[in-house]
Each structure stands twice: as structure tokens, then as C-alpha cells.
Length: 626
Image (cartoon, rainbow, N blue to C red; front, side, top):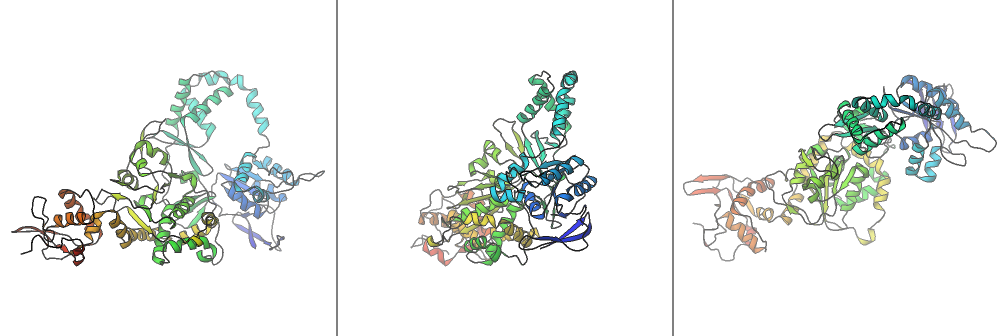
């Protein structure tokens, strides 16, 4: 492996790493103050992390967000830290130390890291091990989650204890000032304690920027933080005084901005779809969440079949080896990855058990991030109290959805980007737009009674009807796919460099014969319309009504519909008015011309029954057409 070494934007040499781990600098490399960045250098960043070697730096990028630099060795930590402080004067600099512990000898890694941190007012984090180890060793031994926890909890500053002592020594002198402060001054003090804060005015919800993401801060947390300040200065307080300070804070802090639609948040930065570049986190990105995945560069000649075989196996089986359907499924996954809730579509995956539906949900959850996913049901979408769990999430899953029959008002409002009422049990009721993609899976497709087009133009149906054979079932498939996630993400980003391509594929799936077949199996009106044929400019059938007797299903549309319902044992036929209102919308989905003509003999429609309708029409016609 050949790694470019640079100082700022100036290339100063390179390092060769052999397969056995041996490292050497190429001749002429200027090491002092030079480094290997893991991502493109940017003008501003909140955090700079400096590790010794490249392997450790790669691990660090998974443990903490920020600009990660590899300083080559411990002797170069200080020069690189000084360069970072000069170019990023406001940034938090973290020196990632190697624990070079050895009985009877100085811990060179720790000493070098602390020296560098002290010179730039930075922080140090050291692997908590009894033997020699770096953070890459620690991750391999204990796993990523434990490493992340130890990395953050073990962080310290050299002069931190001295600073605390000074604060406590001066408490009593500050008593009077705090007690005499106005609510606005206390609010400003509280805001300073947190750092970067912002607010959504409608809900009065406060957000705190930490590690690339704006996280919700409850009023309870703000109150406790304000009380901690009073206690710190040994100043008496009242509940009213605490609440007034928080009320003032909410008027002082800026309004939370809108996340840029072209950004996808990862744990180590953001991918900009408009420039197709990966960038470090920044507050002005206004991310409310990220997927928790570390974005990495692709391997040479990377492809799904070779580098993500488990995902490819699931995808090809679910699509019946149909490449067009595989691309449409990928489009659905891209919509979830990019959180394109603004496309005003939702996905319904339906079909037999064991056909791959739950794996679809599992992959979707991985792409959005489990912490950004909320699971519910159609009832929860319809109710203000039920919707609260979905606020701030980027994916709503409706797994194993039971047979649903209804208007679908909630799912229509959420996917339509409407302002909806939300009722938090212990919070003020408010209105908001839930910016999440909705994914439903079921064995029986949902049946919507709303036929004005609101649901039809949003509903993208995928039919999974090929169960996996018993011998081919792999209970570890979701786990295997999770390990292929970086490859899958890069494939989706490459496949849909033009996002409209994904949207177009989903719209094609929405209008596909597969989707119509699913609807006709769950909604008798769709089944009935399959037996109608357009006559162009010719006159066909009349509408009819229940008062015409005997029935003439070959002449009257409504009579034909009633005969169809009875023949197949369907209860609760639509009223004449509902039938007349719904028929044009369903015919439009079938792409069949349906028009009404006024004649001297009344109104006629340019449709007739197909020959296949004889399967259910009465054996002896009640009337003959004249």
C-alpha cells in the first residue's frame, strides 16, 4: 500500500506499507509536521483527531467524528498538532495516544501525546489496557461499541484538574452575581455551558450539536443543567427562576436550520450527492441524525456479486433474477439511504412468508440507522399520540402489518409532507412535518378505501412471492449483509448519481402490472376494472342504478359490478355514488380511456365488458341490448 504524505495541501512524500505490516518512508520524504489525512482537508472543522499510524487512524474514524490525521509516529504528534492548531484555531484537538506501557520504562506513546495536547490545549485518549496496545488493537479485542465507549469516556485534558480547583475556590465570590442575574443572563450562562444550541420555534424543542448531529435536549435536561449551575455557585434557586432562565435561553438561541437535501449523514462525515464528495461534519449541515456507518473508499473493480455476495443473493432471489426489478428494489433502498421523504412515496413489500420481506426491512434499518428508525403500525400513523415516536426519525417501518382496510389518512399526510399534529405525553402538543420514509411489509396487501388518487400516487408495491427453499434458508443472512453495508452503499451511490433515476424507477414500479395485480387481489374494484375494455370514441355501457329491474349487467356498469361482487362472494359493494367517483381513478391506473358521453338517449360510457367477463356474468342474460 502506498500512502501519500502531505503538510496542508503540499505533498511531502509517501509511506509504503507491506502486506506483513512493515512500514518505510520513501526517499526524500519530509516527515516533520507532515501527515496522512483520511479525508479531504477542509477550511473549518469542529474536531481534529491525530493518531500515530494509519491503521489506528482508520479505527479512530469509526470511534469519533471529525478530521482524522495520521502523524506517522509519536515523535511527529507535536508538529502535526501545532499545524492543526494554526489552521483550525477554534477546533477541539484530540491526540490519540498509543499505550506503550512496559514495566520499568517510560510510556513513550502516552508522554508524547500528553506533551502535544498540552502545547495546543488539546485532549488525550489512551487505550485502557494493561499491555502495550493502540486503539486498533483495542477495537479488534473488544469490538467497535466498547472501543467507542472507552475512547470517549477516557478522554482527558492535562490542565483540567487545575481549572476545576480554581472554579470551586472562587464559588463564594460569585454567589451574589448569580443571584442578582436577570433571567436573560442566566439563560446565556446555560447556553454557554452547552455550547452550540438551536431551537425549533413551533415545538419549542431545543437541540444540541454533538459529534456532527443536532440532538434533542428535553426541558428536564435543561432544568437539571441550570440547577447544576446554581449548585456549583452555592446559590439558592426557585423552580420559577430555573424555568425563567430556560424560557430566556429559548429566545436567545438561533433557529434550527433545514438539512440540505443533497447530504447523507455518516458517522465520520457527510456525502454530498450534488458534488459526489465526502466531507467532514459541520453544524451548518443541520443533521438531526446519521446512519452510524463509517464511509470508506471503494476497492478496485468493486461489484455486488463479488464483494457483497449475500446482498446480491437476496436481491436476485427477491426480484426473481429480473434485472429491471432488481434496479427498482435498489431505487427503494436508495430512497431510504438518502431519506428522500420529499418524493412523497411509500414502499409496501407484500407476499408470502419467508420470501425476503423481513430482510428488506433489516437492510433498510441498516441504511437509515437503527437509532433513526421507529417501528409502528397504521393506527399509530393516524393518531397524534402515536405519531410522537416518529418525530426526528428518518425511517418508519410497519413490519408484519396485519390486514388493513381504511382511508390511510395518516400515511397520506406523512408521505405528503403535510403539517400534522403530534402529542407527546409529557410535552406540549405541536404541529410538525415528519421527515421520514415509510416502509410497510405484510403477507396480505393493504386495502385503501380512499380512491381520490392520494394513496395511489404515493404507494409503491413490491410483490415478493417466491419463498426461500428450506435447504437454502440462512438465519445469518441479515448479519452477513450488515458486513457488506459499505459496498452496498457505494453501489447505490454510484447507481444513482442522478437521484431522479431512482425516483423514476419507483414511479414505474408504482404503475407496474405487478402493483396492479396486488391491488386487484385486495380490492374488488381493481379486479372488476380488469374486465373492462375501452372503446375509444364509441358508445358502450350506461351507468344504471339499483332501481332498474331486472338487472342488465351487460348494459349497465353498476349492474355488472354488483353481479361481479356477488359471483365472487364479496360483501359490502360500493354505493352507486362511490362507484361512480372511484371508477375513473382506477381506470386511470390501468391506463384505460374512460369517458362519459351525453346523447339524446342519456349518458353513455366508452367502455364494455371483455369476453372474459362471461366467467362471472349470469348464464342467461336478463336483458338483451337492442
